[in-house]
Length: 205
Image 1: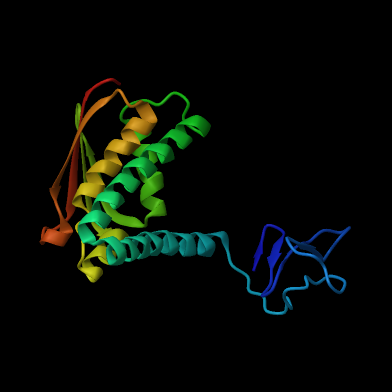
Image 2: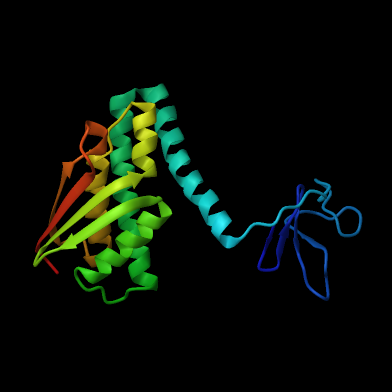
């Protein structure tokens, strides 16, 4: 596949340039223009959008596979506890990284909504509506890849993880000292018409 000058073949990776049109990267070269570990004959071209779709699929499936493997080894209750903690930590560092590189002076609620939009695109959370009040944000989702995967597996409920993730995003963006209340009031996995999350900023912003 070719991405902005990156040409990835079946057995190796090349960087194309006028000086070195077929220089192998990441491997010792065997014959000229080929890495010794592969033949580099099968190639496909993918757009950035297609690569992003693959990344979306991989993220959700890796999360599910990790949970299933953990549940198989340690039991579902332990796996669920660890999964909640993992999403709590991930959402915090995710938002903190965005603040460091893109939103140095976050503003409530606009900056939070930007971060939520980014994460929602990565996780392929679609069919989403956001209602913003004076100090309350309500998010309703009718189409979510994580929810679909959980419903298909029938082994968990994403409600607690959703609460922890929203809290982590806010604390990563505005600081751990902020006081925010998050409630998952509706849940697709429990037969509701949507997943609804209500966020209320108490203090600290």
